Amino acid sequence: MATAPAPERSYFARKAHRFLAALVFRDFRLLAVAALCSGSGAWALIVARGAWVYNIPGLEDSWGLWVGLITFAAMSPRFFATPFIGYLADKVTRKRLLQWVYALQLTQASIMAVLVMLGVDNPWYVVALAVVNGTLRATQQTAAQSIAPNLVDRERLPNAVALNEAMQQGSRAIGPVILLAVASIVGGQAILGSSGGASFSLQNLVFTLGTSAIVFWVCAAFYLVALVAALSIRTASSGVIDRRRNFWANTFAGFTYSYKTPLVFGIILMALAHCVLVMSFESMLPPLAREKLSPDGVTFNQNDLYALMTALGVGALFSSIFVGGIVSHLTRGRVFLLLGFASSLTPIGLGLSTQTGISLIAAVMMGLGTAGFMTITHTIIQSVVPDEIRGRVASVYSMHVGGSMAFANLLYGVLSDGLPAGQIMAVVGAAFTLVVVGTVIGSGFWRGIYFRGEARPVAAATSPAGAGD
Image 1 (cartoon, rainbow, N blue to C red):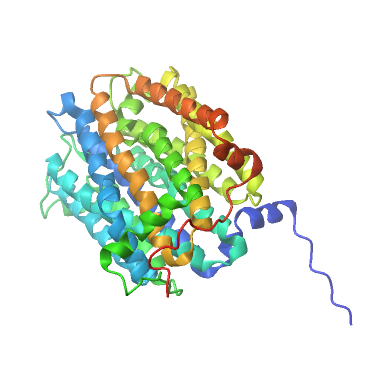
Image 2 (tube, rainbow, N blue to C red; image 1 turned 90 degrees about the vertical axis):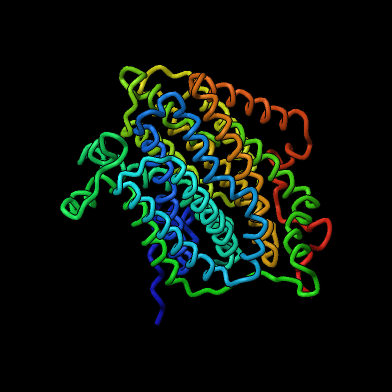
């Protein structure tokens, strides 16, 4: 008896299979859920902390400094801690590392919520918690980037890397949009209190849990869901640590590999320039929201901040998923160049815009350009690096981009106390435009990536320490 042919899939089903191919693997679906929820919690914390600072009396003349300092505190661990984190990601079981990180993130987010419930309005507490949050987030990102390729087959590896990044980037929309919904329902002053905090007693416990600290409890809830998903991952993987070498030799093997492999080193440098100039906008989000979305351009409203971050996240989510469906090296290279220009020109549009609608559209397009660009850099790095050293190379990448963003956010936060944030955005966007143009006209290496699809797996210049016997 002849077997009936399988029904032909619709156009949309074929496209979904192409762009979401890695989701056929159970453990990768769980990782994607964990990444989306933890990323949503992290981005929600960023905007909630910024809004919280803007509601503390007496800080009006140094809002930008404090937001920049808190953002710096949250990102700086990616500079000083990631080499050791990369060593951990290759030495211990990666799924176990993820599970511990999510549990600790849940704890620190809950502590932040309790501080708000108690009416604490000392920003130094937030700085300290931001350092903890940043260290845990750097660990989570390195571990997730290291384990993602182990959860799929080689054919779907680029899609898996891109989707993992899509969850990270697209989560910009999920967390802030939920905060926006909460703020719209219960009111911004009910959430943060008239003076940035809320009194706490046993008599008003129920009211406090429901209003004053709700945005921070929402962040904790995101981390709880991420923890549950991570606990269900079955695949156990780790890197290879050369027992004949000491800790420092194994730790810095990632630097040796990264700096001596031209493709990896070039991508890291480009990602660094991109992050310094057009990705370090977190500390400028509160003043940008006030300048671009406030009716009078002066009054700060946290709803405007949530809306601006949501717009960035919507563009980020779509572009990251789109990049995940690219299978041709040549197409990926051309899209890389296109997204480089999108990343550089859209901040100029956002910075110079004088109308709310245009500002939101520019924010969506900026999220599309920056997230898609970073997704391709992640895809290239994770596709070409051997599994035995992937955690350490991921940490080198994270150290460069995260460390540079920490210092850039601090600088831009300070500058925004004296200059319009929109002008700063326009200037840095123009600077990155020059970088992209320079790579096109001045380097055969980059033209090879853009126009000949040469960003393919390559051998390292030297064998990495810790690659095994």
